[in-house]
Length: 239
Image: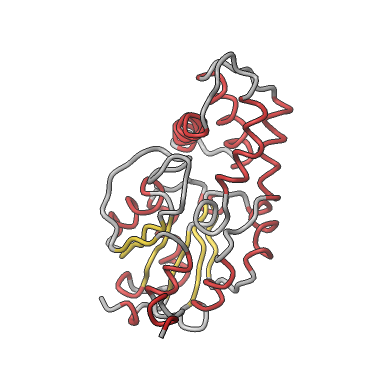
């Protein structure tokens, strides 16, 4: 489908719009520095991603509990005991995590041409704290709390269809995580954009490694806005 025929673009939030890796590592590095050996950021992200995926595939938990328990499980794998208080403090730090530098401008440009939405593995109140930072109007917001499940569950995507009545052919989904976003979008027959943001664990980030083929790939939200014709490309800006 031509990109200008799209009506709705939905986004993963944390990792795609919000720089969760920077926020996460800022809180986790001091805890993992207690290890007997030096632990790299990539190791922290890998163990965290595996622990989170395991928890999200089980009985539904609030995301703040997923965050806390994932940190503790990652710590255990790497030989560090993280207390319940430390884990809760890490989870609550999410509300301080900031957007990527180009997120707001990209969203505002895209909003002039498309309806925007959010599909996020998050609690409602945590997203409410992040939402003002994005400075954009979202036609639909589906959280894990509302769906009672976590991406890559298709239920979260099906909820967008139920609420909006949009056709799959007019819907584009953008996310940083192949595992959480590209895989289910592909299974749903929805075109996808892999927003391959910079990471200490390139191409993966703080999630479980997975394989799928996005329709498009960009390196930032600014590039996505250029792809969609909402912002001039670097070549056009130089003319």
